[in-house]
Amino acid sequence: MSTASNDLRLANTMKALVKAHARTGLWMQNEPIPEIGVDDVLIKINKTGICGTDVHIWNWDEWAANTVPVPLITGHEFAGVIVDMGSHVEGLTIGQRVSGEGHLVGKESRQSRAGKFHLDPETRGIGVNEHGAFAQYLKLNAFNVIQLPDEISDDIGAILDPLGNAVHTALSFDLLSEDVLVTGAGPIGIMAAAVARHAGARNVVITDVNDDRLTLASQVADVVPVNVARQDLKDVSVKMGLKQGFDIGLEMSGNQAALDQMVESLVMGGRIAMLGIPPGKSPVDWSRIVFKAITIKGVYGREIFETWYKMITMLQNGLDVSGVITHRFPVQDFEEGFRQMIGGSSGKVVLDWTGV
Ligand SMILES: [Zn+2]
Image 1 (cartoon, rainbow, N blue to C red):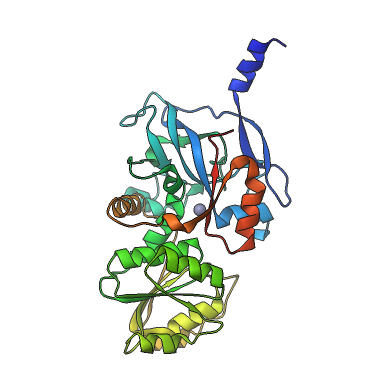
Image 2 (tube, rainbow, N blue to C red):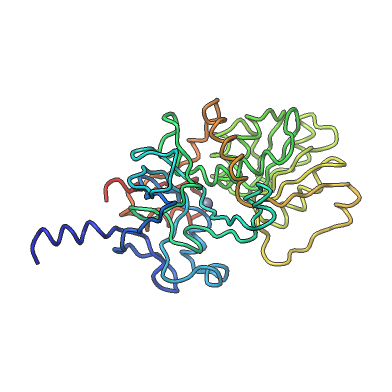
């Protein structure tokens, strides 16, 4: 084969992290560069974030095995540059730095037609149901593209998806002057705490049982970290001068004990935004919730596109979550990146695709 035809063939393939087999792991392999339709853009990926969802897919747990088709290019947290676009695409340009909403929504449901795209029951996810962003190139509907302003780096661009979860959860209720309890100091919990602070909360307490995560939380945001394995949350809140308890709870852990403690720690009429996913059918003391007149809101994804607007504006206006990125690797070292994530003490792990 001549060098020229080799080049041509290489030009049509790309490296991608693929769920190639129905077992633990991901595999870096050559895949065809996606062909775009008239409404799509082709994005050359610079950076990607590893999500808890990707860890589920890596581990091939029950959820992943029931949800993810094999083979599939994984990943949904990304920043990159538009390198090609379909003939119907307007308002975007080649060379523009972008991220994007990874939930692909329909236009037919009542919710979508009301403009509540994040509630569309037909939603499909890139990197979960459709080919994703752990690749040199991603095809994305232009509707889902988010332009990145110059002051937002590719690293931050690659974590806007989980920051969006944090923003959506934190802004579920008015936080101004309120005392806020965040349960779970994973990356999204930490970012939600930072957002609560930025949005004007009076006190923000974040709980976990992992000291590494709590240390990271106090480095990233002006919050009070509490290790509930050792410290009594009630003591902490009394010392802070809280008379009845916390006004708002942001449940980010999916941990039954954390939710129980949150209900216990809230004021009468308190409000809970719940992003953490409890395992299976978890027991809940409903009478406690009823008698305390507590409101619970389930949170899914990001509001499309109001959350994106708010988060980019906050980032341009003093919100700094850059410290939540604790590890950066060239994508060739993706196995080490996943090892850090599975270890449970890292913040966000960002993979760099620019050197592929
Ligand atoms: Zn994610």
